[in-house]
Length: 191
Ligand SMILES: [Zn+2]
Image (cartoon, helix red, strand yellow):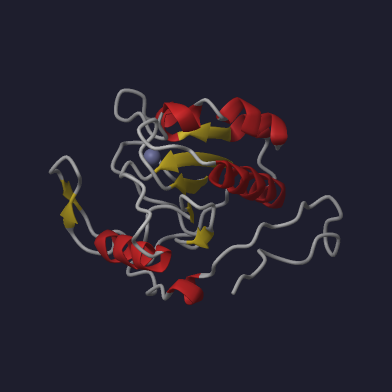
């Protein structure tokens, strides 16, 4: 059901922490990316929230497939603005309300955004929910911490390069919402 990201700890880098379990694209039935983008090198990790309410009923894989098909077509954003066709889900990893982690857009491909920052070099992690309206659950927080620590080690991202979306697009968004944003100092210390 799960796969680990990269080699077992200690094989190549004895300092690489354990990867948390991650649901692969194949597992949730992802379509291939619909656009070809140049590769990027990850230099920072940026945290988001979905900005939509957590759903405790809709199955996780169904959410992912729905988000992917919306992402891969021309459509409207929540505010009514037009959105172009994106290659894939804008984020590289999605953490649902129960703390399950899914692989989304391939990490080698820059993400997408409805704001004006340049996503090249950013590894994007999204938390399901709209904060602070929704509760950021302990399991979600644990997954955020373990995934971020693993990804920071793997891509050699310094803790001070782990930020929230709002840090790159102030005035355009409050993403990842105050509850998640307030966690970032302790996330950086943990990493
Ligand atoms: Zn965001």
